[in-house]
Image 1 (cartoon, rainbow, N blue to C red):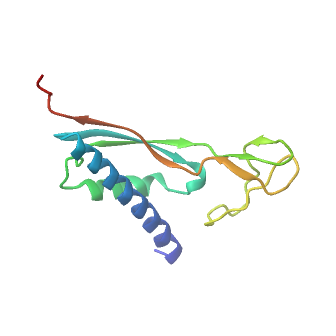
Image 2 (cartoon, rainbow, N blue to C red; image 1 turned 60 degrees about the vertical axis):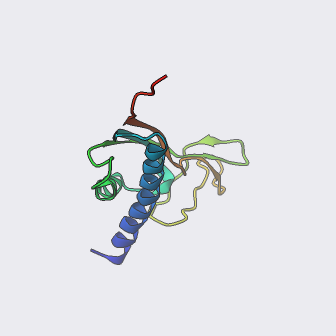
Length: 134
């Protein structure tokens, strides 16, 4: 494995570690018995690899109430906004696996701002919680 490959895997593990921490904290607040499913939305420009996210999730939930849960990952396409009024997909550079890629407008060629595709969001968590007695 190359250093570059290891750096990306560490990135996914770090991000997923924070996500699992949040998921387990939410489950604890609700006194959940188990977590059944977690739905994530991952932006294209996060450069998070789905396979590594799944691997990290499996390792990080082992021995927890989330151990047997399923992880559903939905990819969010990246979009840009340019001063020339263009909004949509960027012109991607040939080498996209950079920490901070420069995204250019396909209409005018200027550097554009990212509008969508940078986030990694927990959309919902399905968990089994005890019945509340009234």
